[in-house]
Image 1 (tube, helix red, strand yellow):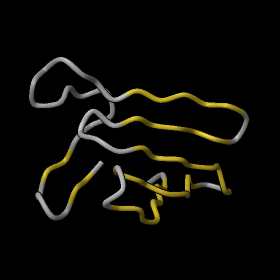
Image 2 (cartoon, helix red, strand yellow):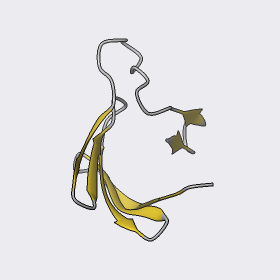
Image 3 (cartoon, one colour):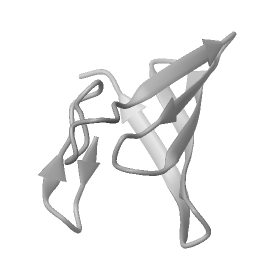
Length: 70
């Protein structure tokens, strides 16, 4: 996961700054939910060769998210 505003890249499973919380995900059918250790929730659906959906962080941000295998 890359957060452009902070220029920080977090690999899935990395711990947040306090070292206590890790990112984790749950899959059901073609849907994947990722709760990020850095805050926010990804709700993604498998669409061909990519995962696409939304990233929401509290009530302050909600936007499109798209991950494609390279």
